Image (tube, rainbow, N blue to C red):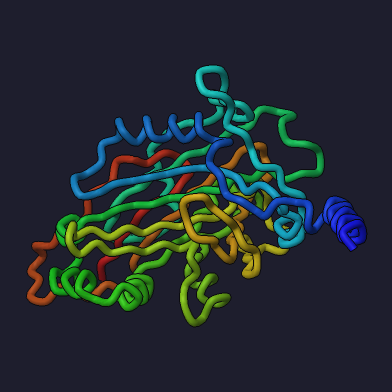
Length: 318
């Protein structure tokens, strides 16, 4: 009997090794591949002129392991870019074709808004030949912005609305916030041209009951700050059907420090040109007018951390 048991165990082991679906590791998110670039971005933000009450965290990464479902979701084989080795190189990233730039002009040209809270962005130029033929360059982009209640009020959010937001149940607060604000993707340099698109509206069409975990919202009522974030896979590609957003709701991503995340959002940057370019904005199209206003509200202060390419934060008053 013991011999039979050993034979069965051995055969099961061989079966597992022979089965790709079982042998491949689960999909895992990591930022190790972009550590050098992320440090450069952090350094850029550290020298930016950012108003009091605003914090910005921007990271790039990749998904490793079994990612066949990602290829299938967009009908293309992805190749996540590499950020090099500390103190040696930037890997796939051409620093001469990358960097920090003010994005206020680009934002104003793309979106008609009344009050501008700020912009943050980054574009990643790639060395020729680092992306294999017939593959699509990709990176996972994660943007978090922490805004204090005081800052929001200074920028024109009515005090009563801000107080209600911070006092609400976290789920109710998220619903209220994203009923008033939305992310827009700005397709700077897209070919053919693409008008700005509402990301949250698209996500809500796929998740009508509640927003997925790749859209972050957290209120700290003690520190009186709120953190808004979004994570997605940015693609150096123009959408073939004109739809720049794709969601795979069933894909599960593991992360050492976080709970598993279900669902992934893809965003096409609008132009396959060996550059990952990512202007995104967060704005408000229906802000209640402050009661008793006599023109004394703040008209908005540009948030001077615009790195050409990645997310922009807007606030619109009517």
